[in-house]
Figure (cartoon, rainbow, N blue to C red):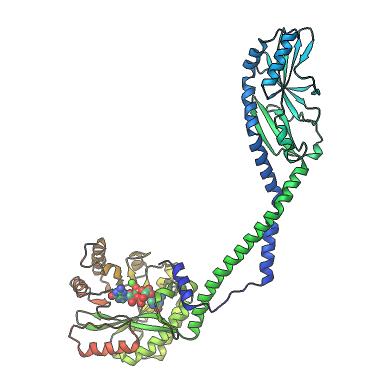
Length: 534
Ligand code: C2E
Ligand code: CA
Ligand code: CA
């Protein structure tokens, strides 16, 4: 089970006893701040929105233009074959016909070799060509830009010319009228420029009314670029429309953040404060699980295992709170509380006359500080227990951060006769390198290896390797999780005589453990299996 799950389940199980409250005005300021922050981006988002709307609206027209520009040389020379270049009836009819049938062409003007002109369109005039964009698209064709006299839109002009005369095609504006006037009158303007000479601007409108930078620009093919500008008035309208939705979105995000933080803090603090209360009320108690020497059928000692006893509630397993308290650092006072209680209880067993050992679980952090260890051991002075009847089990599942320090502390403990065992050997970080670096002489073989005895699981060969290693290195070995006679026998055959597990006895309260010790002493040579409820 993941720590997070366990953590929240535990919090729910114990009920909430602590409410996390953040000052109201701070929450309000946070929500308001986020709302204002998001609404201040309305300028940016309005540009984005507007440029998206215009570019998607005008994409089709621009694509048509790009295709046409590339086809101009061929199309125009074909077109020229239809004309007599005398502005006679036939020519005039052709002009009308072409302008009528092609919606991109606004007007065609034909000029004869002697300067006579006829045109397809007799309405309002368009301004003369302003400047050449591309001089020679082909030997006969050049591109120009003109300006629509009414509202200064740039128009693209294509000119075909030979000795018979010329044809001048004024194309419709690149941004269609419907889009230009969709939002407000002449709010969107286009300006055409040549990519080779981008600094030349042909647009002659009132620049102060428009955005200084183009809203977007796109390539038109044939070396041309079209830049689209919008009126500031239009941008302001879009910005105004976006301000409120962004403000509300920011506010909603702020509320969600506050809610999430509140929930997380509440959960954390509720478990944290429950443990805190548990420590203050001394609710953490030691259970004892016997460790038996099967070679002599005698008691080697016991492992002390933590339990949390909350008044009126079920006993809580260490799996529910140990991962959390190891992280929060609350494991230190809990261990002290357990040692204090265990020493008082074990003193009643007259162990000073024996070599029996009580084994205490610690995490690497605890072994990395001599002060922490000294403090725990100072509790021994109130008892009859000798230091060499104490052992520490440090789990390999957690990582050591300062191996040098840990090795010093372990050495100090050894000088006092206190043994340190490597718990869950083979399951965690250090592998067997910890044994060497920390000079550890005892191994606890985890139940995950023992439970494979009698199966063909790969872990069985791992068990055999761990045992072979332990023997080779001359280490003391204790197998945990022994549940069956078969497992016990297998281990004994391999030379692992120190065994712990439900086969001998579950973790139990002191009264039951005292009874277990007594009966073990009196039936020293009988095989004994006692089941106690944990
Ligand atoms: P651990 O150190 O590996 O302890 C052995 C666990 O295996 C104990 O679980 C024990 O009840 C269980 N066990 C023993 N024999 C058998 C068996 O035959 N079959 C099965 N299925 N299980 C068996 P428990 O008491 O629930 O403790 C769980 C873990 O919590 C311990 O694993 C240890 O890592 C941690 N823990 C317990 N007390 C303390 C403590 O005071 N300090 C620290 N730091 N950790 C502790
Ligand atoms: Ca252990
Ligand atoms: Ca274990």
